[in-house]
Image 1 (cartoon, one colour):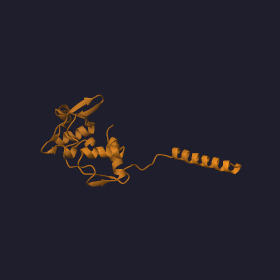
Image 2 (tube, one colour):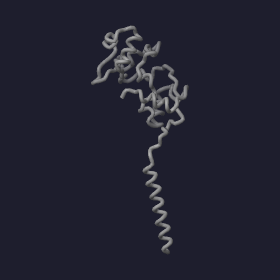
Image 3 (spheres, one colour):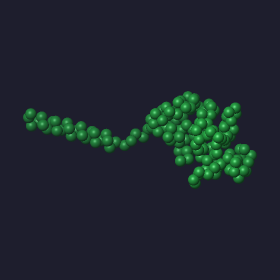
Image 4 (cartoon, helix red, strand yellow):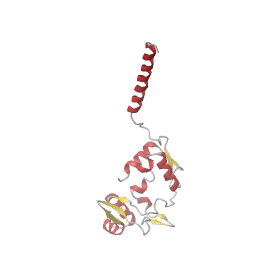
Length: 164
């Protein structure tokens, strides 16, 4: 191997290493995997309202809105439908885990005043973290992946409203 060949090989290694370093130091992409938007249309099937026990987080504003919608005082509503979980509040559930406001025939009986957690479904941070997470949502929600196309900005705004 001649001296020039060594220089060329070393130069190629340095160039390749510089490219690798630049790739590794590159900022994360600013566009999420759902950059073209996601479709969703609530079918009011109740899949997100029924099933295993969980929490429907509510704050004082949401409790007041729900109470007003039902024609009850804040105190009446809270005493009947709200439970304290640590420092937070959640709606109570029916035995088996269904939402207290889910009716098999009528659907959500508080739909116009439903909590933010319900309004923002399925665009919760954990549901849009990856395409695999979204596909999991689609398996359980017949409205995910069809209907209105929501933009990245709309999806991000929805996810930002979720109580964490």
